[in-house]
Each structure stands twice: as C-alpha cells, then as structure tokens.
Amino acid sequence: MTTTLLATAYKAVDDKKAEDIVVLNMEGVSLMADQFIICHANSERQVQAIAKEVSDKASEEGYQVKRIEGMDAGKWVLVDIGDVVVHVFHRDERGFYNLEKLWGDAPMLDMADER
Picture 1: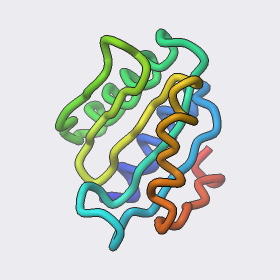
Picture 2: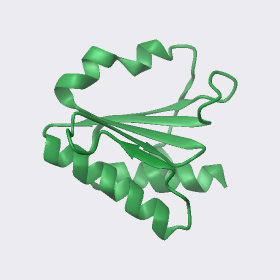
Picture 3: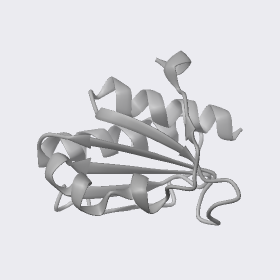
C-alpha cells in the first residue's frame, strides 16, 4: 500500500511542477514515516497549490491525510499522509533547512518510472 501512496504523492507534486523532487527512504532511519518527499516551488502560492494537490489526490485514493502544517505561510508545508510525509518548501527556505543533509543516512529512491 505504501508504494501506491508514494506513487500518488509523487505524481501529485510532479503534476504541479514542483522542482528538484527528492524521495528519501526513511525505513530504519526514522519512526516518523517510511518515505519523505522533499521538493520546492518558486512562490508561496505554488507551495500551497502543490500541498493541496497532494492532499486532494491522497484523499481521492482513499488515504487519510493526518495533518497539514504551514499552509497559511506557504514557506514550508508538511503534508503527513501516514507512511509518506511530503515537505514542500519555498525555494528560499529549502536550502536553509537542508533536510537532505539532515537525513543524510536515508537512501534516495529513484522515482523516474512514476512520471
């Protein structure tokens, strides 16, 4: 089920033109989620649109969106859909938080086939 959820979330961020999409396999690294999707956009409005698309598509597929944080500011929106957590950053914020480095032990997953 996680693979389908991951594919749904990945397709949602890709469809809304998120940039530099990275998928980290968090299994054995963090108890928070099995995978993180990290991406960014160039404006607060686009950050919000990407997060909304992830939430909408997950709901349409029958997954429960546990929480969404940061939607009002549109600088860093976290969409928690259980086994997958999507981090949508504004371009200016992504480098500051640098989650890829913070979770450097987590291997990256190649999602090229999901496009």
